[in-house]
Length: 286
Image 1: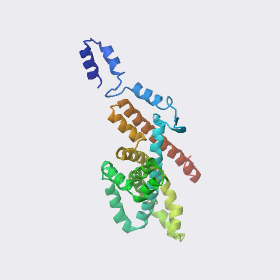
Image 2: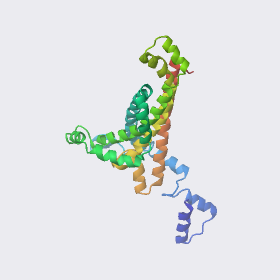
Image 3: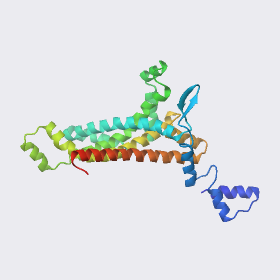
Image 4: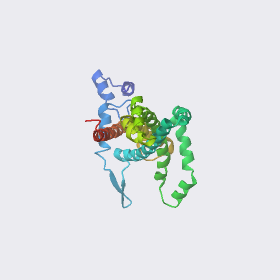
């Protein structure tokens, strides 16, 4: 993909390049169409290890926008907040759907329909509405929160919008996983509905919950990155992607993409470790 540019530059200068020289030139372009793996690795190294995380500015230590970990932090914070909100709402909806026939027939179809709306169409609407809330604007005017903190709210909402649905589906499947014989046994013990929920349905749903949470947290990260594009955020992986696209810095774009993938993998691994601990305490895993 970078060969055309190399040949064009060689033609302009009248140089004759061998095949080996063409390959070497395509692998080392400053602004390639498709960066070479070593260029992306070098960019990640230079913007993490090679750049200090904090720098002094106006006599105060502040985060360094040249550091990729700094941008990852600004993306992960609303991701975790949106994930917590979406996960909580997802569990509540799942419990209501399982225990209420009316909610099963009314809420579940709307939950499914909500995921058919493109997030790129929803994100600007949420950003405009939330950014113009009088309470948030008053908080900024009074100096209680900064403009960057104000942008945290729409990013967290968009993140929760994408993250709640996997939790709903997974928890509904988990809460309905006990067999009829198990439910009959609880009835013979004269167990109430709350007792059946806490002692049978919820423990049976725990493996389903963690599986759905792994999908949910990855979706939450995607939601935050998408939300950073129309918010005009200065910091974050989405802002890094947008800046790279504006100035044709493809290496910067790919390094931000790989950092997002690393963050998602790390979050899923943390949930996997937590799952093993919980299942072991429940006697359901090694």
